[in-house]
Image (cartoon, rainbow over all chains, first blue to last red; front, side, top):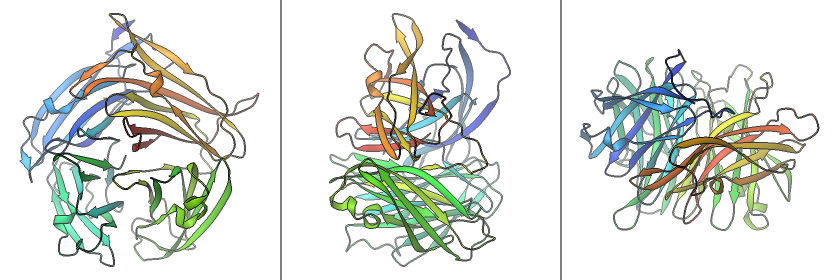
Length: 232
Length: 250
């Protein structure tokens, strides 16, 4: 039985940092909660909003998705209007979906894929941390999405060997940012001697802003491609 | 809350080692009060062993290689093991509920990092019901990891909502037949084999993708099943090398 649902069902907004060029592509999955009655298949409207790195709304779409089947969307088709920022095409994706349809992201290259939930959210006194590894062939990319409608200031402290430098970044309202850790902290990070070095990042915000944060690591592969990993 | 706990699993073999990273945090309290990290390792062929590490500080991230804490993992033991991580502080007024823990599987060319499952407080009831997503395509195969930290056997029941097609798609429930997971052990259950070529596939730029929503209930094994405390993880591996790429705690 297939029914078009117009019932009032609880919705929730989930926020993701997504990218389509040049390092990786993003696929969005909707995983329905398990039900023992898959014969009763509803179709729920789901709203996607894509904001570019500076927070401008560049695309909006409404889709009808099944309550029983996993739905798959390649996001490249929705993020065409986003501009390049620091050589990367990325955006802030907002998904408004019923609570029974859990959105998940998978970022992938030709050589690997990482499944991701929604990013950790920092706000007020709540800070988060990320372990990272740096090497000649590894790059750590710290990604932010501003969930609020006000510009947010974010503070990041790196724990690397015996040094703990700190930096501030500004994330536009509804916007996104990608920070290359090695480039941002180049005065403190010297990799000439060691093959691979472990470090930590502590990230927080001073204001009552809400910012989603994730860490991606890109490992240079063969033939100009790369594999990468992300905290899931 | 002067103590927080997570449950996870770790991998130890010739190619892959495990690191545990932790961040004792208490929101506005930034003074570097001392904290401790207690690690309990268990698995088949390995009695539960607990080691407490001192020297960690509030608001300062830190980490440790598991084989440095449990030297048997360097040589004698290999495979999958269960791990409970606990951060505590002797400071009476410090609330550690904002703390985080991360697990990393390190190999020479790649790593996989994930957030383990935070264990419930004593006051909250055991849920025993979980939901996840199984996929199979050119990039990933997946399996379910069940970590049993209890002194009793547990029985997971797994059901998949599989979309079958004969022109029109019909979703059916497929139940996976499983035995009990012994006390203090870890079991990996492959789910990709239930996503065969008879399932409806989505055509993507990277090839055909088959996926199914997965429901899992976990009970204490026995005549009168009760919801059990367990750690459940969806593990996504590389199709060719089978190395772990990402892990999602359910």
